Image (cartoon, rainbow, N blue to C red):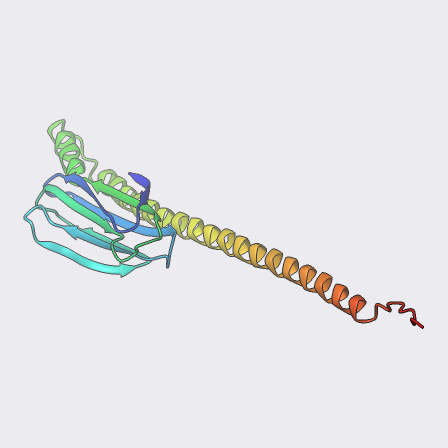
Length: 191
């Protein structure tokens, strides 16, 4: 599951993901835009133990092979930022390799010997899941870079326009005072 999550300043959002016993749990997050580009990220095991403590980072991930099962608690913290909200890409997946073992057992019960085929399919599935994780990571990196470029462009344009306006106002004021300096007034002698 891939989510783009908006987190308000000074807030913390938590999400829960059920993981079957024996399955692999993978979660990653990446700040796409907002503030200093960092947020806190923590993962709590279903037993209540914090397996990935809070760290103020731009991105992070966690993977657990052969989980004991239960609801994992994933939190993204923006409490250090009092004014800037964050846009965060959150990716969570549960991979159940035990299902392939059941499939293989069913084939053996049918007197089919396809161990090599099953191992190949298992390897392909693992590789596909790794590729999906890398794609998600790079998609988040691309989105973060694009948002950074957009924010920088807006910043430069805003300050350039302000500087142009200040230069025009300064020029008008200087022209006014230079003309006033050389303005000749006719005085008639009274006599």
